Image 1: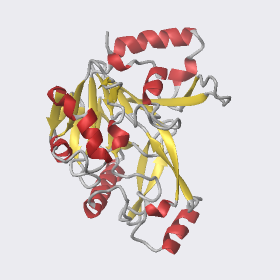
Image 2 (image 1 turned 120 degrees about the vertical axis):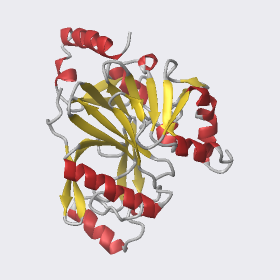
Image 3 (image 1 turned 60 degrees about the horizontal axis):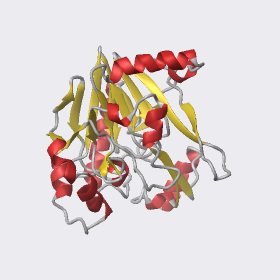
Image 4 (image 1 turned 90 degrees about the horizontal axis):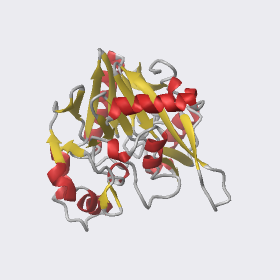
Length: 324
């Protein structure tokens, strides 16, 4: 049994157990998970559910990471006082920042499609929780039909394998051809990403479908080239019944520093000039066409809109527009 039928049956069970809130809105749903023996409060494993036409879209919080010295990651090409002024105007500290990791699940009614897999087993306790978030949302890894990898950075492919075996036993895999070729041909000793690709991705090559710009994952899900962050970084258009949402992956990695200042350099962008051009192109499309988007590193639940603001953009979080 796949996707839609299972969701309906689990909804009925949850509703009968007082679980109305879990499926009634697109607000984050906090599912407590035991943390036995630590003496700490139970971890919170949130998910959020949206409606895009006839598709059910669920964002899954793999975790968060807090880091010091944000300008070593964002706005690397601007003076410190400019970075501080922009940050203060948005009530952001300049000595730390929090990053979010948010895979997305799309239930088309025929297929269950997971976009990216989080950091995976062995990650710190505050991340690597995608499996638990998936299960709290009412699904199991075995029910996933397709795993789409937007690109091959470790926080997107870390959860592909568990215990040396595919974490999604019944899934086929989709990724950009250019992305796979770049990383799979690299010496695994070159860096941590290449090592993880050799460990987690190359063994699944026979289950992999490689897409180009405009290629179809399943009906209603189309690949769009968005290089710069990595050579073959892809984003995906989700379309159903005249409604649209774009999964922008790592096109923009911060809701202020990347949108209000798309030309600011980001440490993890491999081709910084190309990444900035892609940001402007994608954000401009979202703004002019008024399309909702889900950004992998946006503040959870990671879904919102883009408003044009002069020569740049402003992030507008989704509130209730896409409620189920």
